Figure 1 (tube, rainbow, N blue to C red):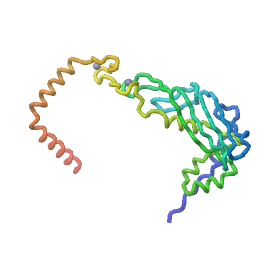
Figure 2: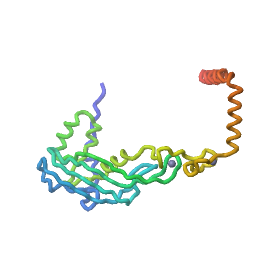
Figure 3: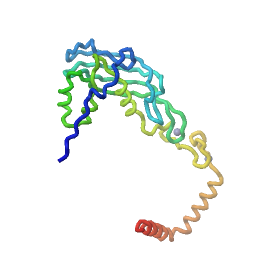
Figure 4: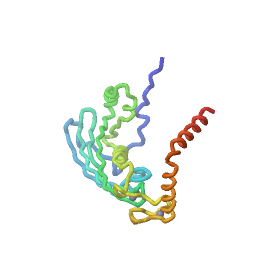
Length: 222
Ligand SMILES: [Zn+2]
Ligand SMILES: [Zn+2]
C-alpha cells in the first residue's frame, strides 16, 4: 500500500513579511472583507529582474503599466488584471533585435490566511493545487509571481522580426532580409553539380537508401 503524500505546510513557504512600499505589493484593506467590494488600481512599476526567458523579456527597470481589479470574495481577494510592457529580444532566425508590445493578463485568488482549511478542502487531493495557493499577508499581496507567470506565458515562443524572416545565410551569416539577392557563386556551382548528380544516380537511389537502412539495423543488433 502506498502512503499518501502529505502536502507541505503552506506556512513554511511564506517568506519574510511583505513590504507595503514594494511596488508590486498591493493593499486590500479598503475592501474590508466585504464580499462583492471592488477596488481598481492602476500603477506603473519598474520591471523586476528576469522577467522573461533567454530569448525575449521585459528588461529590468523598464516600465510596466498595471491595471488591476481587486474583488473581495468569500475566502479572499480575487485579483484580475493586465500588465502592459515593451518586451525586447532577438529574432530566433536572424538574431536581429526586436521589440514588441505585450499585454499579459492574469487572474489570481489570494486567500485569507484563516481561509486556509477551506481552500485546502476545495483543492481536494491535488497537492499541487494546494502548493499553488497564494495567501494575503496583513491584507497585502505580492503580485510579482503572478505577473512573472503571466508575462512568461504571454511571450512569443519563437519571436521573429517578421513572419517570413529568411534568417541568416548558412554560408556567411549575412542577414538575408537585408539582401534578398544574396548568393554565393561557389554554392551555385556546387548546387548545380549536385542537381546533375541527382539526375544520374536517381535509379540507384533506392538501393543506396536500402543499404543505409540495413547498415543501421546491423549496428543496432550488435
Ligand atoms: Zn529575423
Ligand atoms: Zn552568404
